[in-house]
Image (cartoon, rainbow, N blue to C red; front, side, top):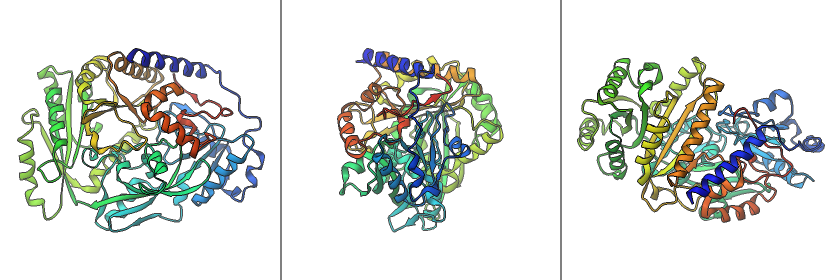
Length: 533
């Protein structure tokens, strides 16, 4: 099986490189139907070069594909009308929702079609309505705005991504993971109800009890079945303060053992409310305090010395958080001491700071400001995110982090932390490793390229990582997946593939939705172009 996966991967890459070389199918004659502008929402359709150029690339900065037009919808009905127009056309055109465009390989693009600017839905109407135990948020809303809206009521969603400048519909179309997932599951596991505009132009309200096949398909569905225009999201009482903790390890066995201990604890036990892990390769330890808002320059020097003294090729960090408020503040020191006594980090390498709940959840914004000022935010991001079975994480560490990437000096982060399989609902489209293990790891190689040569090198390393996993029989799954041919997607979804094709035929029979994912190809749509192999 492993060998066949590698052969399929190489076949997909050959197809991809062929397209890059210029063997692209021609645009449909005349582009979009000429009577598109005759729709009642014609004033909301933009075809000028500036508008289409803004929707032609994404956060990854590796793929470019121009749409023929951009829709600025005022309501979900505008989106439905556009989709119905496409499906009734002699040659249906693709439609892709775009929130913040935070995909990395063109997944939010619509070559030769129409990009729906989801952020337009929120203009003039906040579309965040808080109730006692849930919030109704427009699919276009940023999570940071949802947080601010719920905090005024003393409430907050249970699960978060690390970066909050993403849209509700965007993260729910993938899964939405972060340091709370071990306890609450991904964001898709904390949704009560959705409003969706399907690929047939139908406006549907769905839930686990109403049109549940669409509900579970859309959550983690990569935009293939419809566009999320509203989500009803579970809330819990919001803490006021956070004890933010980082623990340093030079031994990966102790690091993974302690992480797994922490995510096994129930909410009623002494433990953390957020658990993630990071890996820093030796050479990244000397880059100075601007690389993170957490460590001081003295801290970084100590960590660099630790790496040198222990001969470790990597330093590992458990990043954790303990929530508290006025009532529990007197006990936070004792609670933290109790937890730390159970762990095997390097003695003396405990780093803490106290921040507000909002500051903690929105912490990546501070780093974004620093990176933007240094000109290293809007650069190519050849990210690779993988779910790795628990039983193979040490093999991955040895072969990839200490092997393939052993001499690397990445600009960016390497994340490595476990999640509990039971917190994921198998009815949803999102996939996890095909094992019966109760824990799996997410590994995020979140690296940035500052030059063309560096981008090419990082791309080659990503391919080497995938080839290593295949050769060694590590049954990993890509998160925020990218494949260049349908066989790759068939293997990705595994046993779910048949159901996915049935749901696609039901809810998007013309295969016009989110073509940038390259799962189901619309025959008349040109392939996206890329700036690097």
